[in-house]
Length: 210
Image 1: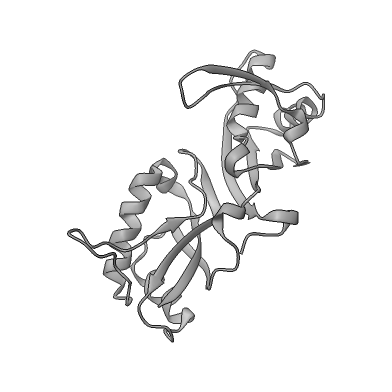
Image 2: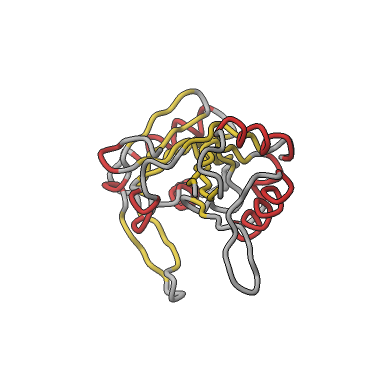
C-alpha cells in the first residue's frame, strides 16, 4: 500500500463549497480517475481521504493538501498527477504529488493573502494589526461569545499595494483572518470588501508543510 499526498489549488466557484462537499467531490474524482485507490472495508466501501486542514467557506487556496492510499506500492506519482488532472474541473489544479513527509497534526501555522478593495484600506488594516490592541469576538464550540486580544498571536504581517499577507496560528489554536477583518471593520465603522486566499501551511519550526 502506498500513501499519497496531493497539493492542489481551490479557486473560483469552489470557494463556496463546504469541507464536507469537498470530501464528496474528491471521492467522485478519485473513482473517475481510474487510479488503484485503496477502499475502506465494510458495508459501505469508500476511498480513505484526509484533508490536512479544512478551509473556511468563501476562501480560495493555492495550498490545499489531500492524503489517500493506493493499493499498488510502485504506482508512479507522476501518473497520479496526470490521471487526476485529466478529470478535474478548471478551478482545481494539481500543484504536485508526493509521499507524505509530515503528519497533519503537526501543522502549526497558515499563510494567507488578503486582497482589499484599494491600497488605502490595506495600509490601514496593516497599521491596525500593528497597534498591539487587536480584539476579536468569536463564538466557541458551545455557542458562547468569546472576546480575546490576539495581537501577540499574529506571526507576521506584510503589505504590498492592496494585498496584506499574514501568517497566523493554525491547528488547535487557530486564528481565522476574517475575525481580524471583522475587528478592523468594527473599528473603522464600515464593511471592507476582502478576498481571502490561503497560500501556505507550516509545520513546526516554521517549515513549509510537506
